[in-house]
Structures are given as structure tokens and as C-alpha cells.
Image 1: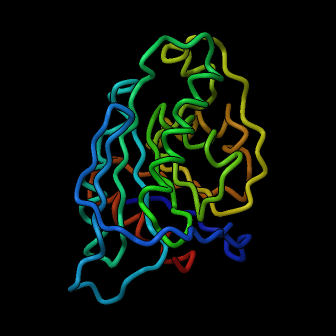
Image 2 (image 1 turned 180 degrees about the horizontal axis):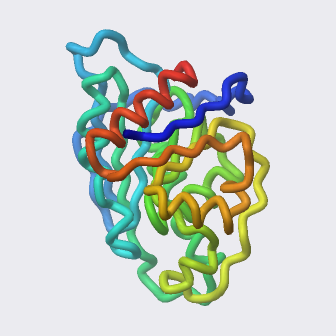
Image 3 (image 1 turned 135 degrees about the vertical axis):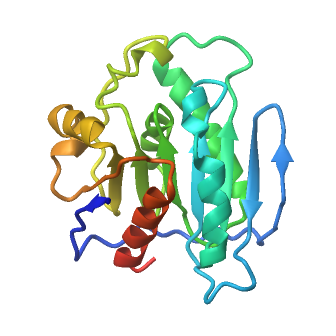
Length: 226
């Protein structure tokens, strides 16, 4: 069973409407990135205005994409518009990790603009892609951040980085959750700034890809009123 801690009366999400008309795209692929947009099912009991974005960079960290397609396929049945976005590596080598993160952030910003969604999404990221998500939300609007088995520190992800990447110091101004196994969560709480933040929701599950994880995510979204 999932161990879920939700703190209520959280700060309101950051919203900034995007004026571009909504365009539904089944699949878009380019040398920059690829994404699949899945609109809310017509049979869903309601249509949720806040979209969910499932972020990965499989060419950089193959594990970042595990389970994302499954989640992005299930939530439209609950009324969510879902975007599955897989970012690509730079065409040329980068000199440092800041440049690599900037590359991914620029791709993600472009894809979100292209999607034409009415509100900033709740961003889901797994493994090393959590670094991309945290880079993005440090200077861009989001309605929430959900990290799945994230590195306990940027130093832990050094195998994916060309140079050391300084730890993030953004001020959480929207709901944030971390979902991981008990062993992963214990390490995250010990080493991560977010792990020690009482305002960050901690969700322990046996399997971060299974039905238990899906139910835990849905419960978190429900508690937040999304």
C-alpha cells in the first residue's frame, strides 16, 4: 500500500494563460524532441482544465521514460489532457551541465508553447529527468511538480552530467510531490533539500510504475483539487 502524506492549504499554483489557440496533436516528432498529446476522454466524468505533462529524455537517461507512456495513457480516462514529451540530446557536445540543462529547458518551453495548452501543466519527471523539470520550474510557470525516484542530489546523477551541477535553490510556490520506494525515499529525505522540506509531499510505493502508483498520483491530484 502507498504511504501518502498530503499537507493541505498549500500555496496556489502559478498560472499564466497561454494565448495560442488549442491544437490537438496525436504525435509530433522532430530532431529537437517528440511528444504525444492525448486529450481527455469524451467518456470521462469531467474534463480537467489543468494538463499533465510527462517529461523524459530517453536519449540521455533511458530510465527516465519508464512508466510514462502508461501514466499518460491512463489519465485521459479520468478527464486529464496529457502530454508525453521526450526531449532529445543536443546535436553537438556541450561544455558543461548548465548548458545541457539550458538545452533541455529550451526544448521543453518550445513544446509547451506548441501544445497551446490553456494553463501551465503539472510536470511529472522520473530519474535524471527530474533535473530537467527542476531547471524548468526554476524560471517558468507550472501548476505542480511530481518527481518519481529522483536523484537524492545532483551529485548522484553525475554519471549523466558532463560537469558538476549546482544544487537547485528555487522557492517552491506550487505543490510538489516525490514518489519513490521506501529505500529511495529514506535516502532522498537524508540528502535532498526537498526531502527535508515539510511542504513537499512524500509518497512511498512498492512499485513506481504499477497500479498502486497510479492510484497514489490520482489521490494527490484529488487532494490538491486539480
